[in-house]
Amino acid sequence: KVELLRGVRAFVRSKDVPPALESKILKWMDFDLTVHDQFRDQKNTLAAVPHGLQVQLLASLQAPCLEEVPILRGLEHGSVVVFCQELFKAMVPRTYFPSSLIIEEGNEAEGLYLIIQGDVSVSAATATDKP
Image (cartoon, rainbow, N blue to C red; front, side, top):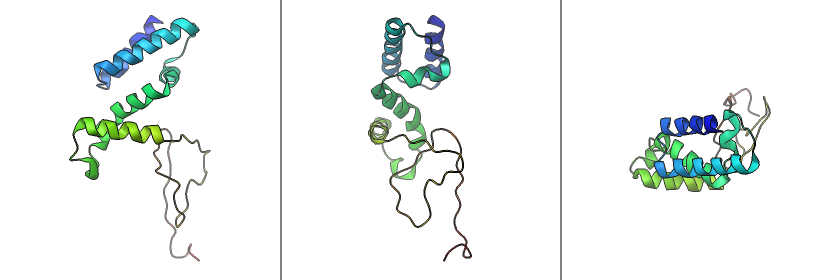
């Protein structure tokens, strides 16, 4: 348990997670590991964190990247973090099998697609492909 908490602490510190959020995550994990007495490997540890804390952590981790998006570039860091939190709260996770078609050119998208894990290929139809 102690080694797992040390690993999580090292991870969140390496990602410059705000100290207050780091504290919340570590307190919850300590509680969860004590109550459930379960061992989690490091890969699945943060997946067990409650959704609200996951949203805060994702927002903290992704805000610096989103601050480089031209439309968000003029916002203060705190505003971008809040934007990220609202965006992640509204997200609906989906899993696609390899070679699955996610969206086809010409069709209306159901939302914004963010690739969290894995790879996608994007291609456009050529003039000979179009009817």
